[in-house]
Length: 316
Image (cartoon, rainbow, N blue to C red; front, side, top):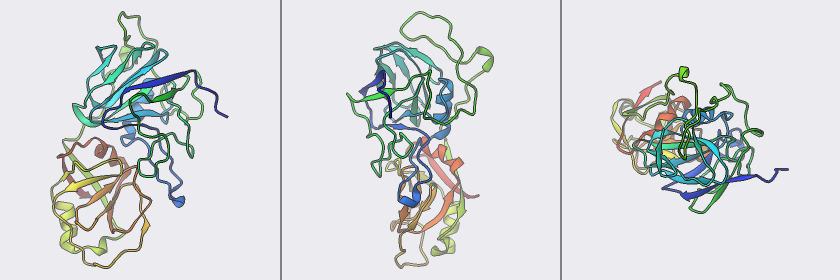
């Protein structure tokens, strides 16, 4: 039985799309339940590490236009992932480093300057009700908490009791901060720790492809096109899939394909011939041929690739 949380995060501005995400709910595909979870998993893990959370603690994932939230208790927070201006109580603070947010002060992640998705982590994590072991919002299935809107609240976890999340594989988190004046006190790793290694947004997205299982449904020239042509990231991309703009892939077989299982990173080719790379909210089955699969480790870059980014598929 879950105890009543002592504090909440209040959504002041939700932006274009802000959801709660953690490490996802893998292992349920056989029941038709997708994985979900943070699209830029390394960024979410690093944000959690900087505030002393286990790597799988729930965070906010916000897209392009940022968001603004107000805690009703003091909390250490960090905004990372896509580069953006960060303010606490209206005053600029460091991006990518832990800051103290007083009770009632507004933490704002502004519009993305580089990249697409920012991550807001809070000491103690976020604790909406879990579904199948995860607090992630799945936009396709509707599992987990709904996308956030202005006026919504999200329970804040207790930093002293990080229960219900995976154990940390890294350092315990930030050291005690030095005392500073102002509404937001900077804290974080000691000076000897050096710069925080946030990855940058890709100027060019290169996705390694393992061909199959249905590459034989495409002509030999189509396979050469896939692995040599320049594509662009489509503005119609979302958490379900990264859509592409570029040359269409010609099929050698035109009959219908019975629906079959698909995995994270699968490159499905719909009737228009433009490849779609399935991301974390993808369906678990599909009826269009999958020409190849992108390795999961390469998908973090896809999460931060803005529309118009040059995209190349290469042989893994």
